[in-house]
Length: 165
Image (cartoon, rainbow, N blue to C red):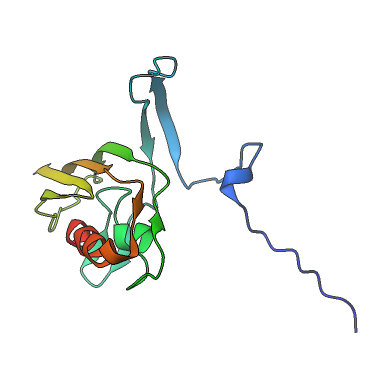
């Protein structure tokens, strides 16, 4: 029996040192950075891109996440309970402005209501507006603690779940 190769075409995007060609996945038309040398200012990255396969098909048609923060519970509060403190890697903040334009003839269905969810753990806000086939989403997340003690984890997970809703 010949040995099988265990090599797979999988990539760790964190370790790429050269540009990975992904034809027809996304076409970046414009990108810019601001405040890279101003240490007291947040770094800003802006880009305009066309992504023909960005939406996910579900029972109601096509679904597009309004933000990269689409599944916070799965990302930062995955388990139902904890025995030890959760390390969040330091206090942090994130702001995203996303504009989604559908192609000609595209109809926007439902959009999230948005809202503000504050707690001792942090701040989450989402503002959504739509006009025609364009949806604009402004999202803010700030984590006010760098760790969450196991005794506070249920309250933290409940806050993250409300932000996901």
